[in-house]
Image 1 (cartoon, one colour):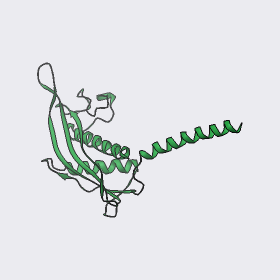
Image 2 (image 1 turned 90 degrees about the vertical axis):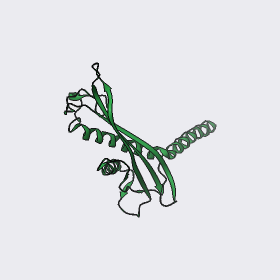
Image 3 (image 1 turned 180 degrees about the vertical axis):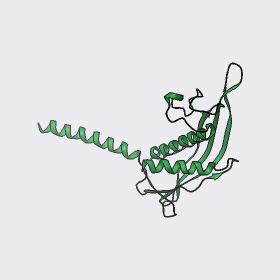
Image 4 (image 1 turned 30 degrees about the vertical axis):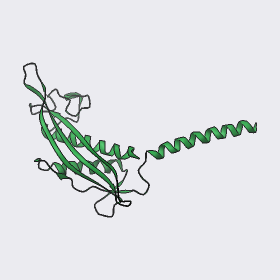
Length: 186
């Protein structure tokens, strides 16, 4: 009987140890609890885009509450970024060879830097896009403007000026990808 109990104890120990190891591998370094996200640099001609992206990333981090966002230099880490490129052009055409959908794409480069240990934790290029048509009303343009598989009446979050909405969608996608990479890097 004692042998069965010991065997069961060993099996459970191995199971819990392996699960504990797995969950620790996907976490942020324990000494990093705060994050500073300064205004991004902008290498494009798009006025206000760096502000929009910085605000979108800040909003996403604040929503998740993973790291406490600080506005000063006392943070444990910093997330710096540069808007590298904006592409806005035709994406799909109708049978009559007229443009039916435009894609607004933003490319950025970010670096997440550990200020305590003075090392880079994550570097990378990120892109996000939003779609729009020329009708002026994204709520009835027949386009899946935010890539969620829904269009027009079936998508309750498609409203506003088309290009502005496409920008918000691209920013949101970039912010989500950055957050996901930070969460899964460790």
